[in-house]
View 1 (tube, rainbow, N blue to C red):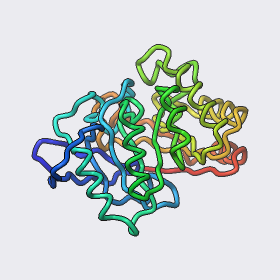
View 2 (view 1 turned 120 degrees about the horizontal axis):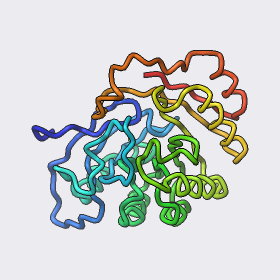
View 3 (view 1 turned 180 degrees about the horizontal axis):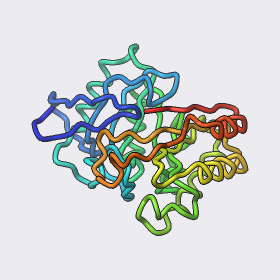
Amino acid sequence: MPSGVSSPRSARGSQTTWLTERPARVRGALRVGGLTPLSTTDWPGELCAVVFCQGCPWRCGYCHNPGLLPARGRRRIHWDDVCAFLSRRRGLLDGVVFSGGEPLAQGGLADAIADVRRIGFRVGLHTGGAYPRRLAQVLPQVDWVGFDVKALFDDYALVTGVSGSGDAALESARALIASGVDCEFRTTVHPRQLPPATLVRIADRLVEMGVRRYALQQFRSTGCATPAFMGDGLRSRLEEPWVAAIAHNFESFSLRLA
């Protein structure tokens, strides 16, 4: 890894690998900030590589990949390098997950997904739903989506810092559910923002919308760049009985502790 650059992190903390190999042909379509060669956690039940896309329009305080927030990062992995790497992993991986940042922030995502499918991999996508139209465009080309629910939809701006973000997320969530694409909805829990009563209301809303798979993920301080979210001694309370009450409402429920 180049000195002075923090690797993006997978869903539960795997470090990325930086590629240095360069083929003769350079497209540069997708701005990639990192790559995890192998993950068992970013797409449940699948062995996958994770491509971390640069850029995100939201500014969630608990973000553990702050280096991916700007549209252009300090270091960049060229897309052709990623494709060359993936071509050598045929038969070793089940699929490729596009994560971020927010992958849908980039107009080149659809072409990148097509490249991955041509190589022979299934495609997963992590998104917060910031771009409903782009999500609708790529849904027919993806096999699984991990959808991050930040808060009650009316309260999104309190987490993302962006007015109207809840409307976009709600539209995206509805489109995902209607599409029938395999998916998991999940919420990262920091007790400063999401106390148990709010989480129960979020779960009830998702059940009403038709969500079948849901996960609660405990906030991890690793990578977080917001001092107010670190070391404040607050407990997430994810091991208390109210969590079991939520779990019974979903076909599949996961609790991911730090």
